[in-house]
Image (cartoon, rainbow, N blue to C red):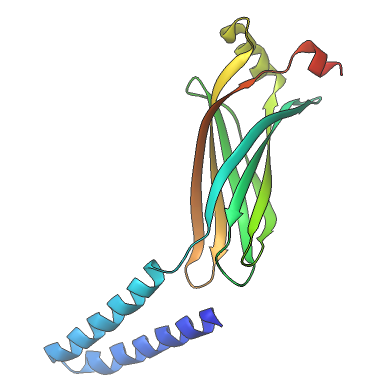
Length: 179
């Protein structure tokens, strides 16, 4: 319904623009500018989903490497579900990228509710070995996780919610590998 209304406004503004553009009066152009500003203000002030990274934890060690799980909480202010186009992530330690990836088409945000998304981050074994050499005895590494949540908002189009969290987690130990 919202997209129909805004689409109708767009057609209306186009018609006004076409009619007024044929006349050269400055008052006609002022009306057109006011109409454009009105629509731009309404779109800019429309509520948008909000998100935060709530947790990042080690989950398991597999054949390809270690897996960490980030929980992302997203609040949808709209009464309709919103499709998520993709989730992009980048995990860094000591200003080096240690993992990155894209999760295509991960589903939708629930209407007028909070959705918890699981973002699985896989770190290859070769990177873990290099990190282990650098960190010493405590097996803790400082990290920065950047996530881009790309959603498809009606009328606005693709909208990116950038998220970032810094923290510390432990590298997997031998007992994690052989458990």
